[in-house]
Image (cartoon, rainbow, N blue to C red; front, side, top):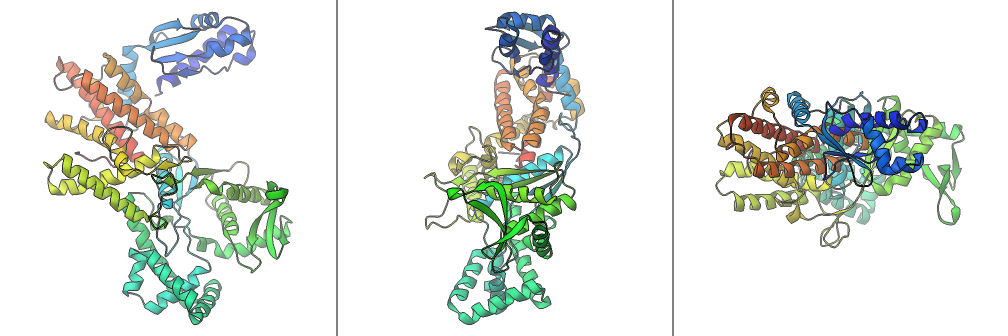
Amino acid sequence: MSSPSDVLAPRVTAAIAAAFGDDHPDLRDADPVLRPSQYADIQANAALAIAKRVGMPPREVAARIVEHLDVGDVCSEVEISGPGFVNLTLSDGWVSAEVAVVAADDRLGVPVQSPQTIPIDYSAPNVAKEMHVGHLRTTIVGDSLARTLEHLGHHVVRQNHIGDWGTPFGMLIEHLLDVGDGSPEADLLVTDPNAFYQSARAKFDSDDTFQSRSRSRVVALQAGDVDTLVTWDRLVGMSKTYFNLIYGTLGVTLTDADLAGESTYNDELKGICDELEDAGIATISDGALCVFLDGYTGREDKPVPLIIRKSDGGYGYGTTDLATIRYRVQELKADRILYVIGATQALHLNMVWDTARKAGWLPDDVTPIHVQIGNVLGADRKILKTRSGDSLRLMALLEEAVGNARRVIDAARPDLDEPVRAAIAPQIGIGAVKYADLSVAHSSEYVFDLERMLALTGNTGPYLQYAAARIRSIFRAAGLDVVTPEEEARRLVVREPGERTLALLLLQFGSVVTAVGDELEPHRLCGYLFDLAQAFSSFYESCPVLKADDAETRESRLGLCALTLRVLVQGLDLLGVESPEQM
């Protein structure tokens, strides 16, 4: 099954080829330029682009195209309008039949693509540090892409590249040994990691003995000392508990099995440096081992290095990131590799990829992609922080969202039982935050405004959740269970304008999800679901459902309601947003 545009596009292309292909072979695969129109279901704008190339007025070009256009089984009307547009009106019978096919399909028209292996690097918090608002978007966008790509049939490998190695861990291990497992201070690793880290840092800066012990502990850690590794593992384990608290609150699909921290690649780093140096790709500069690539220059046209071993012998992000891409290509057998991280990391990633290509670790048939993440801003349009200027704790932000949602529910639905309101509040609050994030292009900045996010009007998560809950209430009012897909398919007959508009949008779901997977842009799905919810609202106002004129119309409209509900719930699930039963 296909969207109307997918069905008509090859036919318009064939008509162009038949009309002009002999004289202009380059037009045999001409772009038909199809789009929705206020004058018809689909409008073909190819004539305007072709006219100059064939030396004919656009309306004459359009007439030639229409003369060769074979769409009688799909369209009830074809007309030329304006300067040369071809307006295509789909027949009620075709729309009814196609929407019935979608209704009968468990996948709602979403195709299964040829499977690829796609590692996705996202979230990436640091052990013993609080997750802050900067982690919000990479976690939410990455998770939505993982859900969508899996739904399209791909093998997604979640890669949570946590910071769990390096110099600070000598300090953190010593502090944990000092305070002892099970102490209130140690428990901060789960409840307030920043407090634990800051306490260790203060001791490191003020106590020479502790500082010396910490430096020695780093050496022991890197040397693989068994007792040190046991304490390090305990430190990481307590941070996992904290991470899982955040992920559980956010409703994302990351688990401990997806952790692929910096420590994973520690044993590979020396070999990477040796291999690059032996190949002449890396050279010593000011005591550090660096890669200098053509085309990467900074101020005064000085070359920008990718440092892979520091002058003190330590390794940095460049080395670890080279290890990760080599692992993802050689061991995971990746076809595409997604890095859902900040836009500011573009230069670094490109240098890593180009180095990996030069070393032969990144072949041409593997595509790395930077899914660039823009900043979350406050009302002052600066990066969202606390009043003291610190990074805003992610858990504090989520708790505020749930608290505000609970106040909205208490005011709007005091008739609901307390357990129901308690269950709905996190669904709405967290859903509002996630949807607001996903509804704008992931590379764009956006202003964090909880009041707007929680609104029941406009392009918000609660508006879509309410649309789904409203449909469920229709079936409750009728004393019916939501009809099965097979029942939907049997009942659907589209006649009225409100029914057609809704049905045509339902036919687009598969192509929209496919586009999200291909272009890696979840905001496309958000925009589609918002349009669908608006179309359903208009349909419901203009086309009585339970009070329809006759039984056949009532059953058909109930089928449209049920199909809309399924698409809304499935679409929201791909975004990672829950659909409450009541609102």
